[in-house]
Length: 403
Image (tube, rainbow, N blue to C red; front, side, top):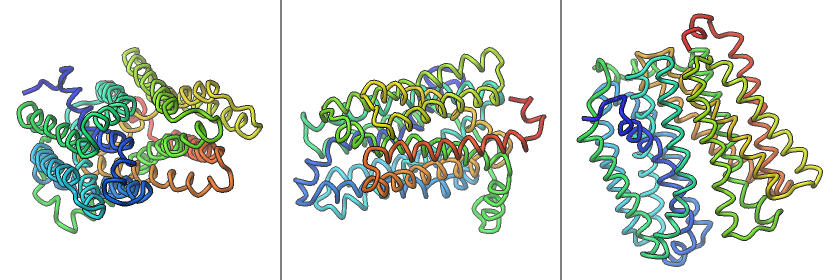
């Protein structure tokens, strides 16, 4: 079994947390070929992403309680087995409707890995060590948006669109083997009543009523809104407004991810130097707000240029990289007895807000064009910062001192 403080265990946690980008970004280059093969349109195939996100948002609400009742390990194994099966269905699909159904189930199954990765961190680590571990997990996780689309394009060209889903199944198989042979159960005590309807309602009610636990879940979700606004609107800004080619856009899309990785690395260093998570998040918000404000100014005044946009997006993501590990830690820390439930709420909130931000950008595009992405980013950034100010005022001093 892997030791919890080993690099290999951190990589395993990051791999579990990365099931969403593994399952979404790698498929993006294959939409055209999939539509042609199934006799439909790219827009219809793109619905598969929305269905995946719906399944991914709903899944944690069940996986969290299941893991409290039966343990993290069996729920992970079951979720990864369902992920393997649904990936195989997607690879062998004869029709679009089967693909869409497979993607919905795949998202539901993939969420088991992501939600339980955070619950495992809460099970095994405390305080500074938990913040450091989350930083490392998100650092590795940040590589996925850079690697997955390029890997998907290579697989598509070499083996065809069905092989993209075979590759997803392969990733699931590797993670399944790692869980079976490398992960010992992390939960300290199973709750035999976790699935009882009354207990479910009481547990989720406790999580939702906790002012700082749920508050920091919402804070992280709003930061996801900033990132998903960029993800959903970047193609229009770069290609339609700034006139870059599709190939160049692929590279430009990946570069801002470096900001997120740098932010998580900086957070890990700050943890090692004893800097409080409150100060780190405050710095992150200052950087993110300044970058988004400048991006909004240059967008509305028509002073946009490719590398100025890229530089500001890197800065915004750097600030987000300082915020997310600490907001996740603050969301889970107050409720060790409900780690599965709290992690479920955290993941569902992030994916739900991500979907909402994508819808907002899509709705604003007909009126605002390339500025839709920037305005959506600014709205979520301001909302997140305002919530952080409120949470900083209501959080008890002992929790703040505990880091």
